[in-house]
Image (cartoon, rainbow, N blue to C red; front, side, top):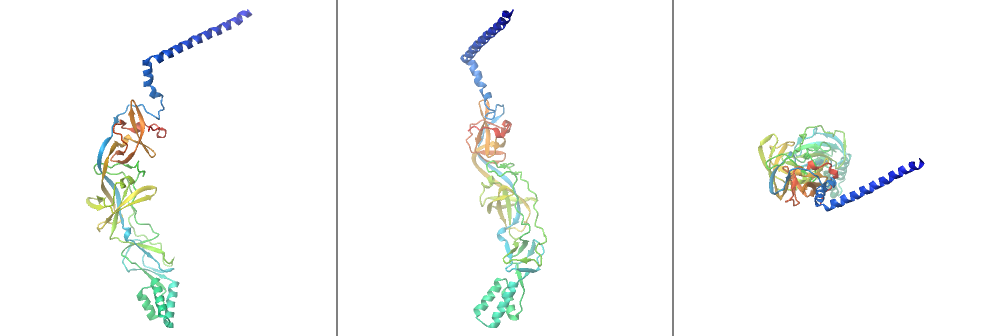
Length: 406
């Protein structure tokens, strides 16, 4: 009984080893036969793309397009507003340090005329200079010293008539008058600034700049701006009894006879314009009243985290008022380039990607893209013979994992 118990497991082990050897021989033969069979090899090559990472190529059945080539003319519609011409602004400062005894200007944007008295400042320095002049006059000393004392008083802000009155009466004036030296509207230096041109909405990246809404006919960029606060009469912060320093700038006078229209442009559009470029514009509440203007200044601006450009048109007509909203239609001529619909590209940071069809898969390719305008993207890379997916977004699972094929 003991011998039979040992023999049975041993026999089972031998049978199992024999089965494994036969199976291994059969698998080797099948593998060898598959390598020799060209039909099986062809099937493997057709399915090879399924074995590659999904971020290198995409299997899809989507419509493809080819890029257009040619020159395009668009009309860009941008927003702007009327502002003061800062070339004509004048600054008013106190020539002496002292205390404001009399203040005749009460509100910001109060109209003033050249030669109008704005305020009077009590100055101990002015009083000392007058006493010095009277002393030199009464002592009958060197006339050169007398002339120097007179010049000092005039530099402190006294005019010739006031000096002559002092020499005639011998009465010291403890107040120095401050006059306006220009016509216009007065604004306190530390008050709210003049209305500034609004920045266009959207990103400011040059190559990926979205100027959506521009078309072959007049259209809008989609930039939204709120109506600015028009100049309002607000009380001054300066008060009688307040001290000022010598040379301290107190007021700015803006000339309302010469204004400027400021239009906000995105950098990609500004790069296509030059000084002297002519276009038409109109007030938003008078669309049928068109005006023609030429760009007098192009100024890059960085404001509130946005990088944009202001194009200025100098106005010489009295029909405009500060704070009025404007709309301009600017014609743009673009050189011959390759053009794709905006939907055919996808942005990966500062890179622009298209999906080129190769065989039965789509491969992501980086291209050199220019301006986006009228729903079309300018492409500087030669893509003349590329079949490209019309909807790149459909092929993107996760932008950060796309591996670009160069």
